[in-house]
Image (cartoon, rainbow, N blue to C red):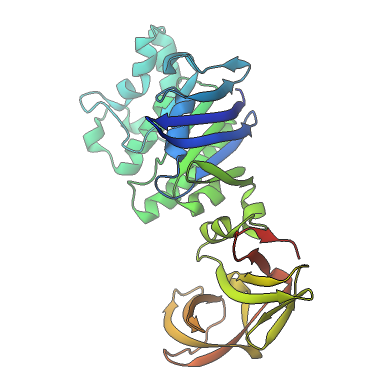
Amino acid sequence: MAGVKIQDIRKSYGAVEVIHGVNVDIGDGEFVALVGPSGCGKSTLLRMIAGLEPINGGTIAIGDRVVNNLPPAERDIAMVFQTYALYPHKSVAENMGFALKVSKVDRVEIARRVKEAAEILSLTEYLDRKPRHLSGGQRQRVAMGRAIVRDPQVFLFDEPLSNLDAKLRIQMRTEIKELHQRLKTTTIFVTHDQIEAMTLADRIVVMQGGNIEQVGTPLELYDNPANEFVATFIGAPSMNLLNADLSDKQIRIADQTFAGPSGAGKVRLGVRPEHLVLADKGLAMQVKVVEPTGSETMVFLNFEGQDVTAVFRERHAFEPGQTVHLAPDPSCLHVFDSSTGQRLAI
């Protein structure tokens, strides 16, 4: 196993630069997720690590080797794709062992590695089947098995769960996490789904527009987002951002005041949906839509023309059009500069 060191990596297509000097260190055995909206550069960065995209500047090191000019086959990585990329005419066992066969690994050793990977992934009874006779989840496990048998220094996952239904995605998330806990291989996982990132990763790299917005553990990003983009991207439902005024270390919104940072001017008050509570002297909001899910109730509201989401574990008989008073938990507030979007320390 080995860590991955990415230093000032740049990527351009013609005159257009799409990755702008990215830096991130991934520790040996660490599970890191690259997240962000479509077009943010996360898959491009993964393909550059894999050697599938040339880089225009900077260095990528896997372990002690700079791999900028090495072909993918010499980087000691294994990649799992969104589309599975299985050979339809080959059996599960043949698919899993094919790369080893091409590398002229002994047949006995191939059989041993395939058997071991199949046991890890609960595929033993399917080794003689063709991919067309497998479910989507089973095919993805075969793709993972093909990566495992190579015993690489780094696993690369490129949105491997996006083709699966919601229930199967949850199951596969658990299987991938258990796999990492067992093998402890350095893993880089690309996804646009922040829930996948938060449940799987040791650390998350949040990207936007070819830049890194913030790197941290899932709870660091959730509790202390560096800016409005991270605040609204991490967490489902998203953080509420409400227009407010700052002066004399006080934040004023409607008829409410909260402790704030130094400075003066327009700010945005951030509050997570679960940190809004019913209170007689709270902010007056009008209910628009109520969505009961069983374990909790999600309520969509309007506050002075701004959309607000609240989540309640308790059951309330809210009705559309009803006015309710909600108060933010003062200990869980976030403040962002209205012009720059950057977090202000309270």
